[in-house]
Image (cartoon, rainbow, N blue to C red; front, side, top):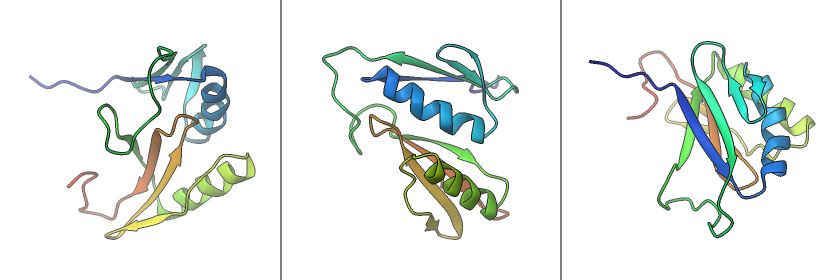
Length: 128
């Protein structure tokens, strides 16, 4: 039996700030909003956004919970194009990194949770 990832739920401390961030980012990578707080890639994968409990802390690099989420990009140029579009829209897009031949862009949301956008050369797997 094989299971397929169908959604990821992200809780944020400042929902309005998170919504502003993801409303810029997600359309640039092919997602569209289904309704408030729900986005899809149109191929069966959904992102759900909710408000975190007020007593929770911000993202910590090696803390418990989701460390980051990653999406594959079609080409190295697509990584650079996304970074330029995010910077133009006012999003803090970090410098592109070379990860042993892969080209990766990490984009922190308002709580610090990072989305990774990476082009992998032929034969390289996303995690290794």
